[in-house]
Image 1 (cartoon, rainbow, N blue to C red):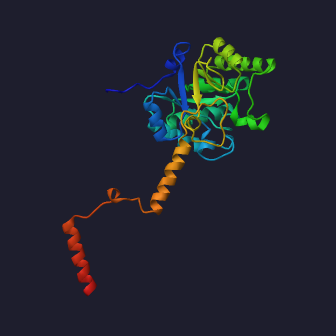
Image 2: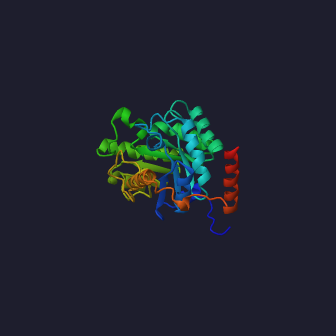
Image 3: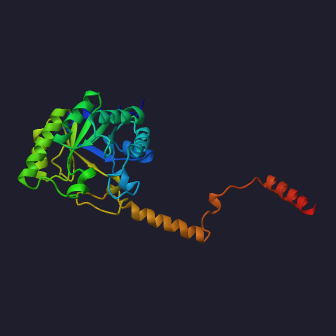
Amino acid sequence: MEGYKAKVTVDEIVSMKKKSKITMLTAYDFTTATICDKAGVDVLLVGDSAGMVMLGYNTTTPVTIDEMMLFCKAVVRGSRHAMVVADMPFMSYQVDVTEAVRNACIFVKEAGVDAVKIEGGEEMVDTIRAIVRAGIPVMGHIGLKPQTAMLWQGYKVQGKCKESALQLVRDAKAIEKAGVYCIVLEKVVVEVAKIITDMVKVPTIGIGAGNVCDGQVLVIHDLLGLYEQMKPKFVKRYAELAQKMTKALISFKNDVMSERFPSDENVFHMDTNEHDKLMKELGDIKNE
């Protein structure tokens, strides 16, 4: 089919390491996924950040599987080319390995995603290995772990001291060995991100980890300037859509109030003959 691009596979993502930068964006709905897909984005992450930008939670921690399933199904329907990855939400994989595998299978079987993402390093090795053994590709995520960050130290930069840096390296090596096909490095100092990127054979995808990584990911609401509650240092705004949308909505309200909308070009009219018949009929009814 003309213009059709095959679905991005795990093998393609792995082969891009050191050759071509990987682009990944979050998506939570059909329309956004369709636009990202048309733009040629390699991976669409249905992030649990949906809890904040779509549902209004203060953190990602409250997000449930049912909520994530709804977002995942919509994104899958809107993606023909990009790989779709489901963020496994808090408490969907931490309690028990068997439960983690079952939940990962649900995301693949019922939502139709191509892979799942799990936060954690050495402590998640058994879980990652079990999910991979079940035939499901796993994207790793180390550095800042948003699901539990607020329970410990907040959204702090990772790897600034020797001990923290060494732990990140150990985490990266451990989850690579467990079978992840790529690793997200969030809010990691550039020096450590480079060490990890050079050390592991799978691609690294940075968010606040510098351009030394094999790819980059951003929350699309941050990139487009839709989410104004916070602006992390690592975000580059490519548009300010919230401001433009607000102006558009104010214009709509003013047009309605002043009766400039709807104008004649926005309404439908009866055929003249039908209108004349209607008016005659109404006149007859009036005179009864």
